[in-house]
Image (cartoon, rainbow, N blue to C red; front, side, top):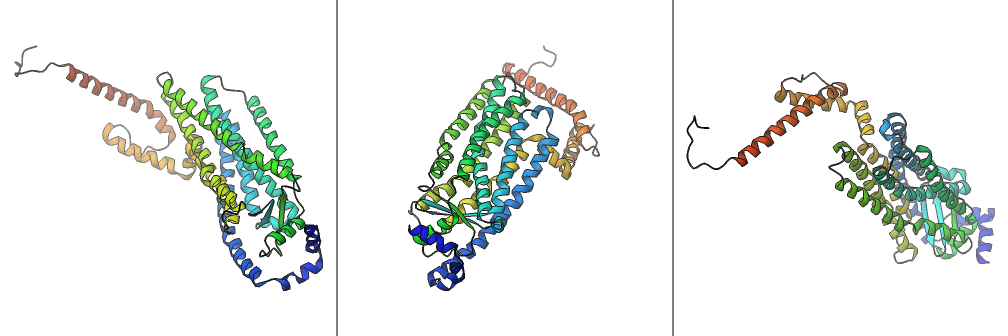
Length: 405
């Protein structure tokens, strides 16, 4: 009843006109602190977004235009990951949320440009961001499982992979729709904060939120995000060891290049799966302590999603670095590829005598690579034969006659 009365007063023009006159000294000082935090952490949101959005657009281009035939099927998973990261980067950059937990309620303050479109649109954007996080976690085991699947079975068809992704996405869509309908009225959110956090001055802020008792679906949605984390990472670790074990056990049966390629992609996936350990799990843990009122530091309201914002910035960098065709495409575009191999040719010339300093570029390298590999292989065989001959020769206690056999 108290919340209802306060909610009505928050919506009245009389409150809006007199609220600034009724602020206490504590509220004024606290608002100065939060205004500083707003401006300070907004800078980090823009830094993360300025990196994340262009990087994911670049990766999207590389996947579509620069994927070789060998990645024809796997690029479906890469596209899935890239598009999810791009939506997450866009939503969190333009929303720039500050989350205020309070007992059974959650208040979300929009600091980014979305605030100019009102609390309803801000809440919808928050739902998109949460949906992207959830779907990202659901997709983690899929990439690891694919690497193991193609080692022990024929490569699946693209259609089958798309159907699997759509079925997985349907779970995330259900969670997304459920969270949309769990929104609590913004006036009631402000009224609830006024009762439980009277030192907060929320005037002029765009606020949306949830209440776990008033909207029970909120608890269900939060549970679907948090509880699957453990089994998801168990699956990730399981597939990692299955792939690594298979490659180790069959190293002599597989081409060296195949083993190297699988291990390179496995390393990329491992680093990407480890990113949440640094960018998502710590702020969630701190946020939980804050919600339980075991710690009381206002800056935590900002840190949670600021750290989240850097995940989609790092993820495409890892993919571009470890997926060789994309890495090489970037090097060619920037000229690093030609300069690197020109230096390599120059150094090789002093030992082989047939590679010119002026040679540069990928085509020339490909033409000479078989010759270089053959020479290197012959040299290694000669050295090995020399060692074996030397080791098998019996020890001599005197100098033999130069004509003796």
